[in-house]
Length: 286
Image (tube, rainbow, N blue to C red; front, side, top):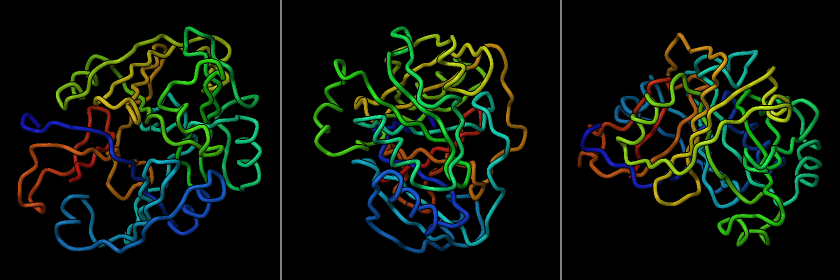
């Protein structure tokens, strides 16, 4: 990893048991657009992903960000249930919305999702960003978050998208970690830079996360462009580590796609898949 340098987050990957059905959910719930579909196979693909056999990949766009929905020919384990944000397997990406009421109305017209948050969307205090947020799981268990900025304080990167509709795009991926310093060191070695750090707690945070009395250290890391970025979630009171390593075809093996320098010229031999200290998957792409 010493010679690798990440340049930006270029997308995300979801492992799916039924890529057609999950893609349809994202289209209906968030207005996503399917831009391509292909079957991936070959020794290089198997080696990079750590699987046997090929996979069907649908690429969709949520706002202006890209998500690969991948159905492996040989499926792995389903998403572990019940799931809590204090589990280190937890990883979500946050979709920015222009109007939370309209976004919730559209989400509620889709079936199969399960709420994580209690009592609907939660307005966090200014010390935690002042955003309104709602966490839930898609029909296959992947955690997601809807995120609305205060109307008087929409960041410029999202203000320019307000005319795009309700679902503007993906702001960040958040991953639960056991130790902030360890994870921060791993990602800084790849080129990430810390841009903010807060300690979130209180009733709204408890309702958002669906856990009692959380105290969570949130560390934002960026690769220059602030969207999408990465957030480390380190719960101070309790952490449930993942004891079994995630295989590439497990539903919980959500991937962050990174454009990186330092890849070998032979694509099949390149160190394409990295796993962070808590088991989260990073896929290096051209």
